[in-house]
Structures are given as structure tokens and as C-alpha cells.
Length: 102
Image (cartoon, rainbow, N blue to C red; front, top):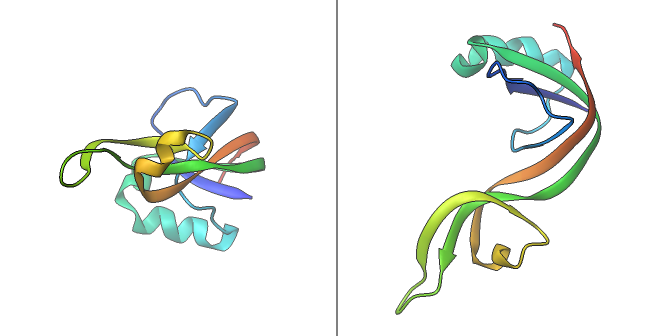
């Protein structure tokens, strides 16, 4: 499975959390031309492992009369706090990947 990510000039960890969707090879060049963030620098990964991890979203806490937003962050499916999280993106743990050149 392929992922096209912004290159922030950092070292890439062995496994990482990504909220970007996978991409097909024919769309890679189009995405780089169309997306201003990718034009600044990008990296193409081919991952062998890409398990669902959780969600990226706005976490709430109980309050009267309505829940109150606390912060925006990634929450694992196994974390009980997920019940208080309004998801905006699905997050996968990408591991066992290699960097490809375009």
C-alpha cells in the first residue's frame, strides 16, 4: 500500500501514525502538482503493515448542561476516552515500510 506524505525533513520512525489516506501510483504525480503542501517536499512510502489504530479528533469532557471540548488529538481505539472523542480522521499505524523515489 502506498502513502504520499509531506516531508518535514525529520527522520522517519520505524512505525508511525498517519491520518492521510493511501494513494494509488497513477495519482501520485497529480497529487504532488495539485497540493501546495506536497510541492514543498514529499515522501512516498510502500508499507507492508498498515493497521487501524484510532481516530484524530476533538476530545470532550462532561459538563452541565452539555459536554465541553478539551483538545484535539489522536486517540487509540483501545483508549476509553474514545467515547468522548468526536472523530474527524481515521488513523493507521504504518510500519515495515520502504521509501520510494518518484
